Image 1 (cartoon, rainbow, N blue to C red):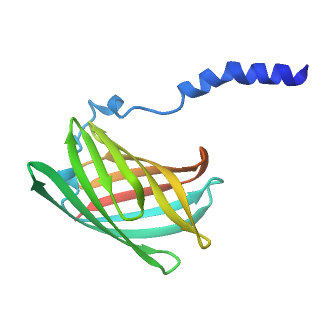
Image 2 (image 1 turned 180 degrees about the vertical axis):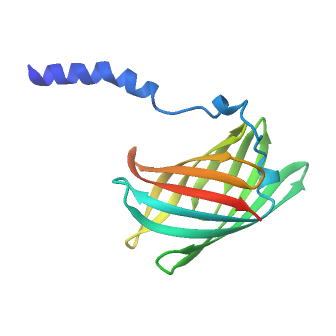
Image 3 (image 1 turned 135 degrees about the vertical axis):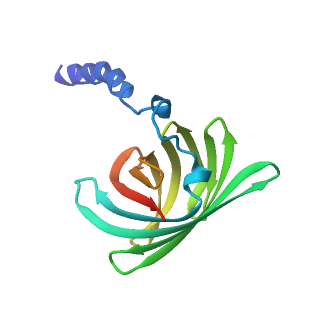
Length: 181
């Protein structure tokens, strides 16, 4: 009988939990300053960040330098973000994003360690960027879901918070601040 009550309680709670599943970027539509990726990510941007595991413990810190450029290709804005990471454990890494403006605040992106295509949507001062990253862990590669939220604070500073999940379970988060040179 207890298991039936538990199952019933779970079924009643599930719709309430799914209602809290996530925010829409459109709720930031009126926020200023307005984020335009081609304007902010143009030139050299420094970033400082950390990865925290699901318990909140800081596991790694990093500095990233992004060399960003945009050009028109067949009438479409296409950006290249060349990211160079220096990690607190002494290692380095690089990721090169190719980002395409799709219109209506939507973007798509590709990078060598991104599985498939990243999807982004901007409104007001915010960008939500979702993708699957092929992340090397202990000699294996895990495909990890990233849900990035970026918020433009002023012309030179942007804050970023990313949640990482695997099979729907939270692995940790990345917190990052950008400063445009």
